[in-house]
Image (cartoon, rainbow over all chains, first blue to last red; front, side, top):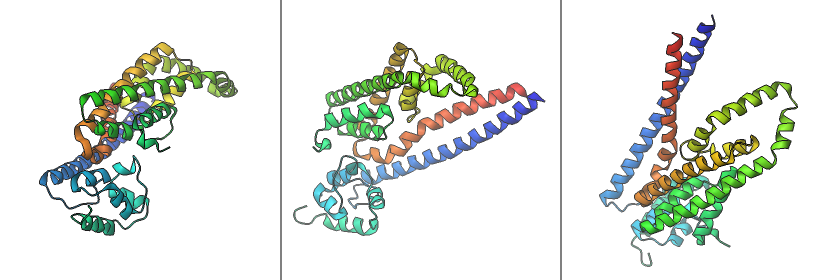
Length: 113
Length: 186
């Protein structure tokens, strides 16, 4: 009887752990795929700004001054903001990301940038 | 004063406060610090600086909890039911605590601060605490700063994966453990 209870307990625990492992593995694979896509994009030489890019990345890749990017975003520069995806900054500050990205893309190549 | 303009001071403050459990995004800052390192000398300087801050923070958190140990146990032991559990929990922590302390520094991120407090409250051997937390912190700073150093600007896309991957390993180990336990009763 006692063993039967233990079998049920360990079976249930094993099922829960396996389900969690599957969930976390799937997320990790998905994150890896996303990172790989970003890496390939950066290697491709395509200069179009996308919403997954960080402010630092845009500054280094597209030579747009940081102040101009923050000006478009309407937020202050900070150590963590420099390293957040544009999509996350938009989400945190209730901004329309499509418009922001379009404006950032139009900034590139303009005089003074 | 804008702390971000004085980066070494910013790193030390983050490293000093995070062992108390204050959510300052220490891992994020460590990887970012690594990504800012241009040379290996830079990298080692940052690793040493943050490592120093984390160790001082760990020791401070341990002694803070240790200072309040009497008041904490007196309150807890008011309840008869908890008394036995507290003693068995303390014995269990004395037996396996080293692994908890060591792994919580660089694998089970987020558990470091609670374990600092538990170590202090239970008056866990300070020498053991310091040895294992220092070893874990050294691995933590070296590995995460190195990720930033290698991946530079693209590390942000890797961040979620870096944080979740150790939990996948832990879950696999737990699944193996649960499977062997189950096999014992079949």
